[in-house]
Image (cartoon, rainbow, N blue to C red):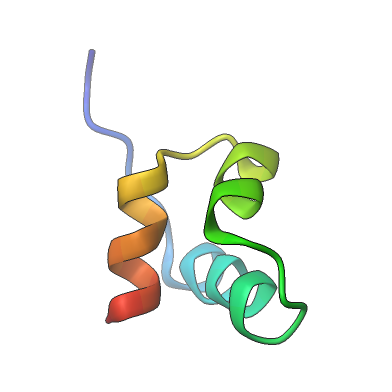
Length: 45
């Protein structure tokens, strides 16, 4: 399976769901259809 690429805006909006809208990382990753560990890395960065 090829590695998916996400643009900067998508990443920022995903992190905002966690930080500003207080969604759990698990719920946000599920809602967006991305891997949990992927979103965890973006939030840490």
